[in-house]
Length: 520
Ligand code: KIV
Ligand code: ZN
Image 1: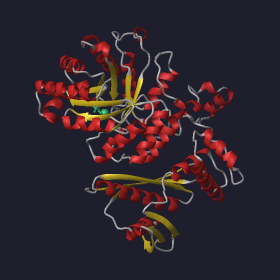
Image 2: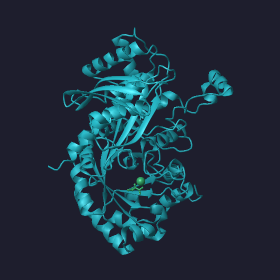
Image 3: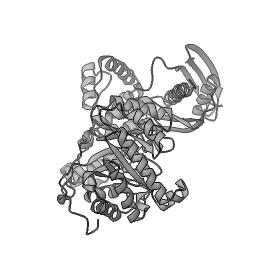
Image 4: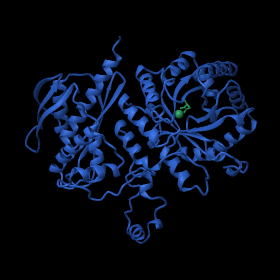
């Protein structure tokens, strides 16, 4: 931060809005696409955890995006629901059509302002960009009370011109001014200085909320966002797990925990219930198939693990010797041995509650049956197993077009891996035998022989839910059909069963997508 940064105490309002863009900027990561049901699940969780603004998508981008923003707008109870729109009337009108269903709707419109964007992306002069700002913000404001405007690539825009564009957007009715570091180029001092300078020079700045939107190309997204807050920004745009274009966006969990743990240095408040952070991280990792780096701050598998002797000794004597926050504060429950085949329904229900799951009677019955079946295969059941089991339960539905009926695998040193597979496809039982370069390849060949398709396999990923050779395997399969991406997942103690189920899950999602994209 520069010397000229105002002291935080000089700013009356210490409440920082958390604006989550996991479903918009996050989904722009190649391969991170989410289905409607997944977006609804994420929207619900973000709303429950106290996110102030949920950017649910880019309504004009596709019918799928439009539908997702519309549905998230309908189900969200507390948060503002926002959609993105370029500086064009068709974009803004489509965005309004989707967000208008929200209790608190917002239109977020943007245009590139830097010389590079003006010349090479837009082929527009400075004056033409100004004219677009005037027409787009005015139109958005005529439709919606709550309008956010962003000068894309703000951090590489000439200072005087940036002031002129922001002042015009404010004059035309923007209520939030978001300053994006689109290419992750800024350093913290610059991030703070830009907000400070705009608050000082823009006429009417005191009537709008300044926001910061930092990309992580140089690993400084969180630092840049916090510097902007110290300089007067009162909204931070971020994503769960730092998902986003290229190196991603500022991570929501890092912003929320940094403001909580270091409230002494940064006296600002958010509305986030941080005990939901692990659940949100896990949900986003599962639906996108983007694993969380083991040493990722706050939500990484190792973020609270102490391996070295000195650290373990210190932790046993007093946790604070090596721990600045408690695992419970981010929703991490101790992975003690929890349950086994003799555990009853009541204990199972209590365990679900302690993990943050409230299931209705039918869902609870179904989960309990699955738990018992897992307990027959796996002696020791940990919290992670139960979470994986619940994720898996959400993956399959009785009405799925393709269902796994039987799988038998033979592999080893003696011959080509061979798979016998039976699927129910559209209610009809179909069987085949296939070989391949390894059992997974053989199984996937068998699926393809029974259900022919042109989708390209982009990702096959296996991860062990817990330690031990009896661990459940969590498998992610990503398919790409004509640039439409779907991600399937499943977990099972048998890696081959989990693999075929994840593949089948991805194919069912592909079918739903094809159906939606059919011309009316
Ligand atoms: O990074 C960026 O500039 C954006 C804008 C659309 C806000 O995501
Ligand atoms: Zn962005």
